[in-house]
Structure formats: structure tokens, C-alpha cells
Image: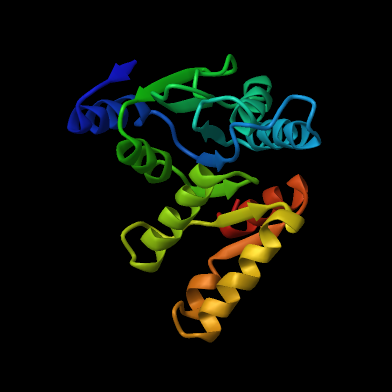
Length: 200
């Protein structure tokens, strides 16, 4: 489904996705190749989430998104892509039970986050970072319900956590806002946190 008008995008997406409950949105780079160990890790994460009873949402493109959708597609729950029209990188991957394609980034981000019981971030670039800080800002300002935010990949995310800690020390960010983030390494830790924080 391709949608051009922003309000129509939101209305149609909300209607189509209303049937999906217990959704986890996973973000990550579109540029990760199938031969990268991170691709395999993302695929296993998608399957673990799916077999744990979660529908898995991603941006619907290649790279980490494809890997997560592939794993979810092989699992027990649904694999959903929330795609974006771009001149490169963003053709929908082949592992989707359902796919929506958006013209506007901001409506796509709303849908990715609005329908999520938790957000997981794997390594990525500008887009992934933008999505992370959008979620953190919405949580900080209480414009969305409190949900778990999980950063997976210690070596990648640890420098960011140090920087965020400096923000806390400078009183730019409150410690309680930083406490919203969980930093993990393994897929099993992700599932453990989800079960604890979502009371499953």
C-alpha cells in the first residue's frame, strides 16, 4: 500500500495495524550485508521475538531490517514492514507478512513507535540515530507511554552512553531519563528485559 497524503497515511496505517497487538519495533542499519555477523544476530533476534509471541515491526528495508524480518517471518508471529519511499536502499524486503509504504518520514516514525510495546536499536547510521533520539525525546516529554528502549551491541552503543552520561552530569538530561535505556549484548538479554519490563 502506497500513501501520499500525510493524514491519509496515518489514518490508513492505524486502521490496518489495529489488528496487531504485542508489537516490538526493531531499528538498525539498511547497509549491513548478509555476510556480516550482525545480520545473523539480527535474524536470530527476529525469530526469538516472534517465537516469544511478539509481532515484529521494522522499517521494512534491507540490511538489519531484512534480517530481523527474516527471523520473524520464520517464527510464530507476524513480520511487518513500515517502509519509506527513497531513491535508494529502501525496497521492501521479501520477509513480510504485511507491508505499508510511506512517503513522509514523520508519519512513518509515528507508526513505528505508536504501535510498539518496546523499541530495540541495533547498530545503524543517521536514520537509526534519528529514530532513537525521537523516541527518547517523546519519552522524556511524556508525549508517549513509557516503553522499554533497548540498545543491543555494547561496543557500538557504549560511547553514546558515555556521552549521554555527560549530559546528565551537565544537567542537560535528568538521570531518570537515562534510566529508560537498557544496554545489552546478547539476544537472550533482550528477551529477558522484555519479559521483565512487560511483565510476561
